Image 1 (cartoon, rainbow, N blue to C red):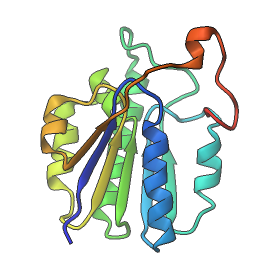
Image 2: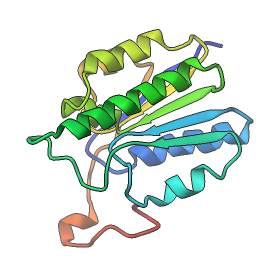
Image 3: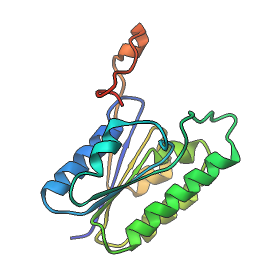
Length: 172
């Protein structure tokens, strides 16, 4: 069966969680998954600690501890995003994986850390039987057009608006 392209985007919470749910389901059926995290290099996200312990899931993290300022993108941030895209490309064409997830790739493209044309090329050149998930706000209309499934998470209510901080173990 041909692999599909899934996009989880929008301003609501749950894009990465949805992608990780797909990875867990895939692992439960013996499928091999590679997850490339863009812009999430050194931060201690709980899911990154656990995912690498699961059978058939490999993880690669790129970025730094600092958040990217889209108005002041640094050369090293562009380099990390390019390395992340290359990591995903190598994994996709290695023949070792059934599913490749590019977490926050949409944000990296929207903020010009990588060129959206390179993301589209990645999608178009992926092996026919490989499933791909792309996450992050600001999915480009051209990425949406070539995807097979697009889900937009919409924020209706968020605790941050009431001054409630993110919770370790729940939000990161």
